[in-house]
Length: 250
Image 1 (tube, helix red, strand yellow):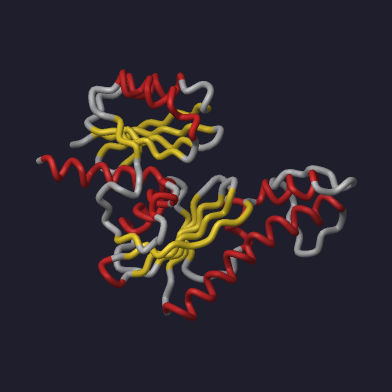
Image 2 (cartoon, one colour):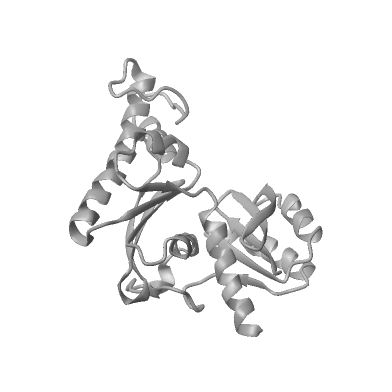
């Protein structure tokens, strides 16, 4: 049974997982500046394939260090590699690898469904996969994430405080902190709901698949029907892509 190393490298954090038979058996968390935990994880497991899904240009030291340590090549995901989905994005070279991986992960589980894949992180990305044509990734939208919205309101005003996403999110804010949180969290949830309604009107049935660090903050406030929470969607997509490579070399 193949054992894969899947790495999600963002602007600050680096997450890694050892995946065997489609199940995550070990994890590590680090930063772009300190990836020692990720290196230790990879050293503790003999992997047959490895993939780096990165959204930062600061990953070169990490890629070089792991590349010299692994018993297999470290593949960097890009739109140029074979995918189980057709890309209809007009500029595939600018399509984030994280968006590709999450779309592939969602399609791997919900093959044959129209999908709205929501990654609620620093930014909220929404990607649309249609079932026609054996699966086609059309593209989507990018907007500020919850924390970015809260940070922007603090930085671009003179008196609004900086509040976090965690805490009470009332429908009607009863003080400045809850008013800010209500605006950011409920506003982001309303954006997701509105897009889901529009897609349902255009496509018929649509499965909404939510992932990302801010997903727990959004999920209680989503009104859209047929919503699935998949925290490890990116890892699932990277694992599926590595499985395709394993099969092609058998």
